[in-house]
Image (cartoon, rainbow, N blue to C red; front, side, top):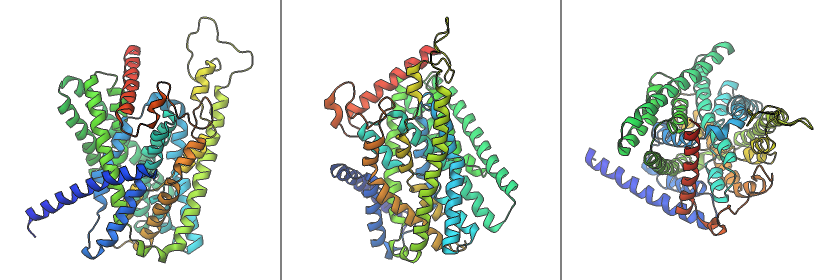
Length: 475
């Protein structure tokens, strides 16, 4: 087959998969099934039917082509002002939480199946990256509090970065054993250098965009930022995910408040929402396509041990680390009985003893949200891509991949399909600490509007515009 025919075949495949993803998303919405589950199931079927064709899914397709779009879009829309009150909790989930999850999975596989500890830790590192796309979609459908969605999505953004770095360190450790200090220094240095690179790139782009004056060129520069900083970081053996995430956060928070026009912001938001949707659809199709169902029964015991350890690790991380931080933060925000705001003091700093009670209550994380965060710890695209990226001569490569694929399928089949019940039951607002309020303050008739409907986009645009005016007024 000539290169021209190959290109034409790829274009046909792209159009076919794009149409299939759109139809499957509509069908999943009709039957109230997370579209990620429908896409993975479709991908599994296609993968089994196409197995005689020996179609190869490369990890670069996910890690270099699809993942930067997902990471940048999520980080670009992360509102640090909204996240500030829960930033410590997110840091615990994406930092120590990753090590706890990876360590417990490694210990369970080592003790339960006899797998060598270093190889078991590689599986733990691959499964430490969370992918809450199905839960995020449920948040939007049920109109859950924005701050809850921000916490879950922010954890995923930073969790992916630390998980990928930990995976690289773990794989290197198998062939080149090193001491704990050397491993720890390598991990911290990669995270720090990658974050610095992303911050500098995001700052420079934020300063350039206001002088462009053409929203098409500005969108092009944002794409260059997202993929360029990823490729540069990867070329220097740093974390492209962390660099892209930090660059998106800087552009979305610093850039928006320093000169981006309303037209540019609206265009950036629309384009990146579409790119993220496209990437998400293809990611889950690729996940299903890459998983060979026939290879899973041989590693069923390892899958069971890994699933059990993943749940225990998630519980310790969420209820132990995040829950403990929540109690400490609530205590810090508490006001002694009878204490009033000192005379002459307007709006005090957050966390001070005289902070306004309504502000304190709004900033608190309800205890019921811990259940939602716990259930949002799905595994998906990143875990699959990392499993595919294992070197061909890596010890027990097929078994390690099978265990990872099995856990990914389990979380999508069980946690994703039950996410609506969990969010509806415990994803209430901070004011009520109960089930989410289905009806917005404007019009109850808007409740039935699906994701991406003009009603939701207009309401989101109004909120973003108000936030921009507030930030600019403050500046």
